[in-house]
Image 1: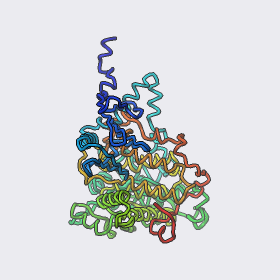
Image 2: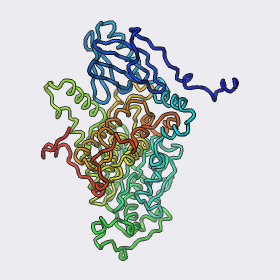
Image 3: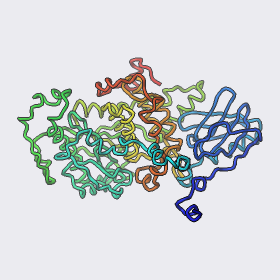
Image 4: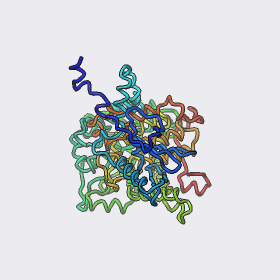
Length: 573
């Protein structure tokens, strides 16, 4: 009835996200593309030998023999290189040029585009919200079905529970799931459920949080299913110039190694025969191993008769950078205080160096005749160091059967790069389409990579120093692996290209905000579509035709890194 139609419950999408009036520079011009739900074209005009159109989602330029169709949030900058030409630089390395007939028209489109690509004042200004709202209204009669199509699959929504079971964590003796971060009360950039050694109390975790950057405590994210070795991740310790220590932090790090020793032996009967002789010299017979599974108190771990393996602490930074961070209150672990641990520094560049490298790479593509070379951009060098770091983790976990703790400064840029790449090399599940989705969700989204700041689509995210193609760099590494192992990945190159585009496009809500807490507060899961609804396993456009499930028998990938590729003549991009 009339009263109901005017109630708050019946606000329509066209009221929340109204269409804007179309301005044509020529009355004969029509919108040259099919609009998405919620998309409205604002301007249509003529460039030199082209039709140009601007909507609330995209820039569309139709030349005589080519077409440019780019989401607005994918555009990094627009400038006038000469009086008649616009020069658009994109975040995925593309460069677009558009020539106009008059200076005035060029300046008008420059103004329109700069207004369109600026960071949103509020998150609802991003197109993903309008798109979802209009879709739900258009398909109102099929709302439940369409809502399901917008959502990721059960393998994503139940990823934590599924992964704990799949990797075979011993939750009786070695590990436990802590809910200390329920409702993000401990750390705003961490998931709500964390895997820690069974005897570590939540009170101890609170103490550790006070000592780690941004309260990002060591949390286990992967278990080798054959030998029980784990990968954990965290933020840097806040040692500072004063050389602070934290007994609970030291105890937690050592406990990770002790829990691995417990887990690998207590689950020994379920180990695959592939590694039995390698893991256990006596062929897997545990009858002569003393084992005490009583871990009911904090000292229970110390009663284990099994000598734990030496834990590898992999610091993504250089030693000089780690020491310099002490001036800002950070630092690195002192081996003297962390017995049975080895600290290795990988020398990976920070976000500012990666951003400059990417800008040089883009400049090289634009002006290939310039005097500097691909190698001088250092992009391949950075990929090489990342691959080397991941391979070190793989070697430690798989061959040496050692636990590894990975961190950089804050633990949300270089750390997910290393950990996610190592997991991809170690586990064939992550090389399937569904597994890759789980990997991205867990290592990048759940553990708080700052997509809004790094991509520049957050609310008022004007600070260019915070922008960096960290995720794109990692995807480039994945692409290098695809090239070396063409039969080992279920997804193809088009899958990665589309994922890069929609990391920035804001058509989907998957990569909005800086962490899961912010996404929960903004209700992005309910108000936007998931990118995995497009990049789903059933979409044949993203299937690798060379992939064979038999390739999963080759569990561990051992790739060349870029320096080796040059040495051995292996092709790379």
